[in-house]
Amino acid sequence: MTVNRKFFLGFIRIHILYHAQTENVYGVQMMGELSKHGYKLSPGTLYPILHSLEREGFLKSQKKNVEGKIRKYYTTTPAGNKILQEALGKLKELTAEVMG
Image (cartoon, rainbow, N blue to C red; front, top):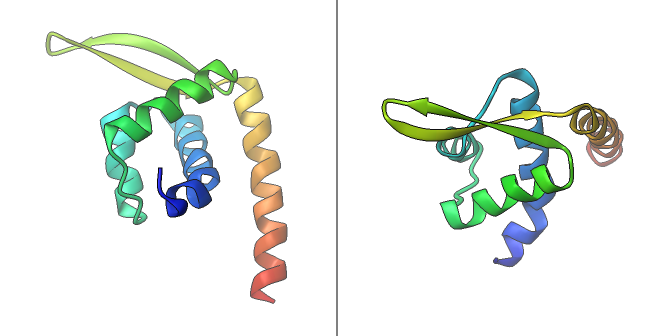
C-alpha cells in the first residue's frame, strides 16, 4: 500500500461506513463511489478493508443471489453507526480547525 493510501485509509473507511449506513453496499459499487472522490482502489485493496470492518464489528454482510451470482452486501452495525458518528464529530472539529 502506498503512503497516500495509508494516509487516506481513514477517509476511505469513513466513506464506506457512511454509505453502508444509508444503504446496503457491495464491493464494486463502493469502488465506483470511491473513485468519484478520487480514490483509485483495486479489489485487492478494497475487499480487505471491507472484511476488516466486518471483523471489527462495524459492518455486517448478507449474501444475495443477483443474476446467478452471489453478491455480498454490507450494512453498518450499531457499533459501526456509533464509530461513524464519532469520526464525523472529529472530522468536523478538524475541518473547523484547519479551515479556520
